[in-house]
Image 1 (cartoon, rainbow, N blue to C red):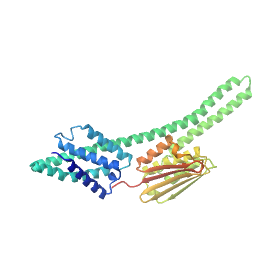
Image 2: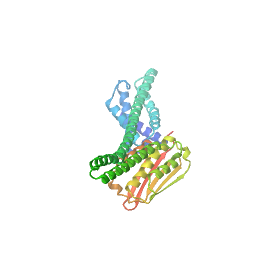
Image 3: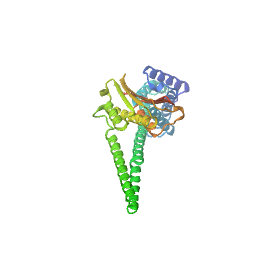
Image 4: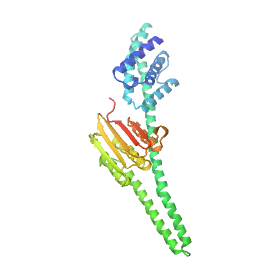
Length: 346
């Protein structure tokens, strides 16, 4: 079989028109449409060759399918969209294959074999794309977990380890001053005790934070309030408002939202010196919308790349198929806006 550029163009146009009728996100951008055309061309290339599309490793086809999988994962496109596009591609290309075989006097057996090869060529690409999709998401999850571990390690080092180190120095100086200056030696012990108590408090605080990183029992609103009571100083007011039914939010979504909201509050308290932090959570139209707004010092968002915390927040929301946006200006404050879908693509 041989498929002319005209045949390929018509098939691509029909496939894109069909996906537009289905409101598919795979034709919403020029990049997605181009990838769809490249995939269709690649499938027809398989049909033109005599190789088995399952056992023959076409490097170009493999790389293209892997690129498609990663791109769709980055854009938050559900895998069902790829399956639906594969079904539509088969529907569009099967008549094309049948016509080409009939031109060459192909009988029923040849047509049946052509349909099998067409199905294998399409499904091979779906499989390759699914693997790269899952691999990309797994790396994102690992990256988020690694960032969280780094944050905890930094907290332990900066707060607990530092206090313990200074306390040990004071205890060593106590021995030095014990005979010549007993009063000074006593003060060193007192200071060391205070530092050790500070370190213990830091360890307990971090342990409590880890323990409270679930919304399973008290719910998302209570988890945010508990964090604010335990970790925000009394001179900063934290107001939490909720609209809609939080009980309808899946647990895995609720817990990720809590971690992101917690990090946004933490960033505000540590870097913005606010008087008030507002947290709004709204469940509406099949999605969770949340904002963390502070009246702190703000920053120039266009010139700030963001640290590990912001990157981890963004990755967590990306994994939920949502969006996170940070807006800020010096002297005005900062707003972290989050939107997460609560229903899967069907």
